[in-house]
Length: 112
Length: 121
Image 1 (tube, each protein chain N blue to C red):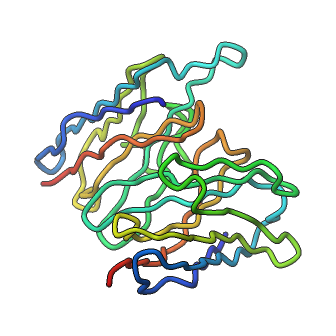
Image 2: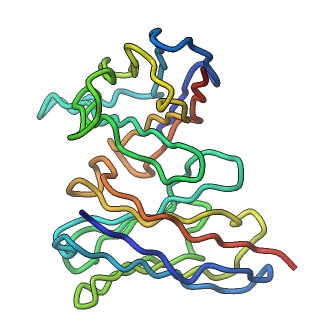
């Protein structure tokens, strides 16, 4: 099974400042035949289901603000919120879809 | 907008059974892989099971539910199911029905609001 390790567990950032969440996989998520990284990022606010923010490591979903960006390749990935807004307070999860069992990171709680 | 509406959650005794349903609408259900993800109270997300598009002949399960849970789909009813048997206290969680971007090895694009399953005597 591919183990996803997120860091930090929690993060306090001032409004307007940058937040960076890291995610490391136990094996490469890069599929050589199509050069895609099978890595997704989700945002979950209290009492709500998760929301897909980023797919293929860096492809922002429709409607997701530009301040959210994903980067990385292979085994090391990051989600960056360039200028934190109050509505970005949430738990963020990375998830690999390279192989089953699909696995999630433990989550990173972002607070103001 | 895609809609996924779970039903069937509730309280069940250890060793008991429960079936969840997920009514899907506003997309071509037959063409997408579907998944169940659970979240224990105060914990993170945990993948449970996935089923491929089409006739649903391709299924995958997390080791901790293998042999106890069964995922299925009825494309004529646009409904996803999860039959849960031999339930344990550690199966207590909110169970989310979710739609993939395409196949099961793609992002999970839409999520239902979740169904709470509580396993307790």
